[in-house]
Amino acid sequence: MSAGFAIPVVHSASDLRAITEPMRAQGATVGLVPTMGYLHEGHQSLVIRSAAENDLTVVSIFVNPLQFAEGEDYSIYPRDLQRDHEMCAEVGAGLVFAPSAEEMYAKAPITSVAVQGFNAVLEGRFRPTHFDGVSTVVAKLFAMLGPDRAYFGEKDYQQLVIIRRMAFDLSFSVEVVGCPTLRESDGLAMSSRNVYLTASERSAATVLWRSLQAGREVVMAGNRDPDEVEAVMAAVIAAEPKASTDYAAVVHADTLERPEVLNGELRLLMAARIGQARLIDNIGVSCE
Image 1: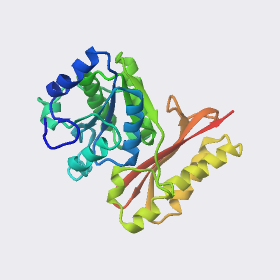
Image 2: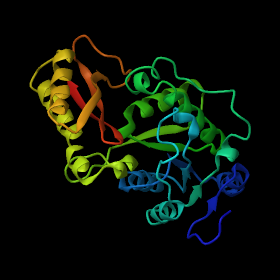
Image 3: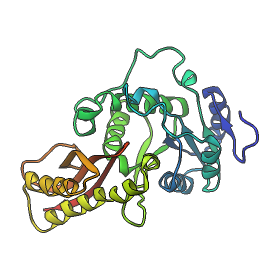
Image 4: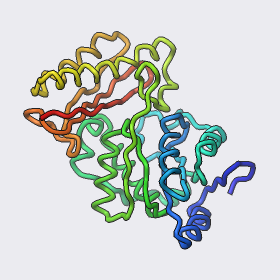
């Protein structure tokens, strides 16, 4: 356990359980907010939600090497535990779990969790090992802590769908709670990777939100052709010289499948590269 913090910070699963298990034995509920750190107001909104719904909120801070492929930004991903701790404490977290890679993976892992199908579309096409790494580390966190509820932002919508299915299939007795995306005043989704953007790139990055809004407007106007909706979204990105599109997609919100004709609860999702940053965003829309 680290000293000098307003709330406890533990680095091992044994210390984590030493604090949480006696509380649970007395009937306390535990909420988990899994993060990779370098927190922002979006993460804080998850903590606030958890603190309102549970007796103890645990925030995990771990930059998980399994979800980064070779050549991605694992080595430069921003880290600042002191800052993260202060942000957790000010919004009601009761405990920070900040393990090392050696604590999480004492031996090179030969077991992984893969949510087949869901892990191969959208982000999975561009980051084929990413979601297996996410599912594996979240499964380990669920096993270590046994939370009653776990909170994930809708900004990473595909991740949220995958974690819900993983928890269901593996019979984890945890409620996976999705929370709305927090945005800057100009619509840019809050993300730890926004720190990579230069001033001009930061201005250009609002194109993701504009693209999603354009796609939603087309659907709400009655267009039910996914090709046409995706083309509208992609055209907005293409008009921004600093941005390049990885994908612009419209899918069923619960299955991530692309419908032939748009209907029901849908999700518009996109990924774009701006400078050093690769940004993702999404928005929901309903149609009959």
